[in-house]
Image 1: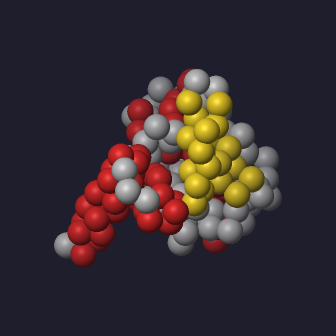
Image 2 (image 1 turned 30 degrees about the vertical axis):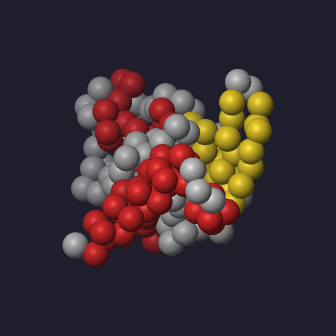
Image 3 (image 1 turned 60 degrees about the vertical axis):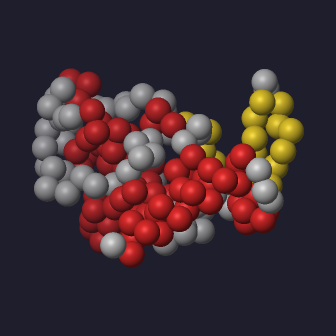
Length: 160
């Protein structure tokens, strides 16, 4: 599970990402690229990441989890800059570094739903509905309209 707040050690970005795992230069470079941390991996981050921007801290919170190559990932929205199409496409999406891994996200971000295989709706501590995204797309109603609109907007952006 990745923490809600970036847990950053006062060492280089590289050491924060590798974090005790065996160094694999190819996978490391893919992680840095896909987590949008290029040209900063040798940066000393300082105490609590003082030399990094808020976005860099958020992306640096994701990178060690990605590099760890786990079978299951559990994240919450504050840990992920989910508005980043780059991270969705290159890390979380079906063609991202974590393709083939189990990714569980607790989110209120509609943008990520169009990439989800399954959506569990949580209402007052209960899950009244679990559906595959394509099932929601086949239904008519509020959730369908929101997801359809976002999917069309994203496809239009990719075609431009």
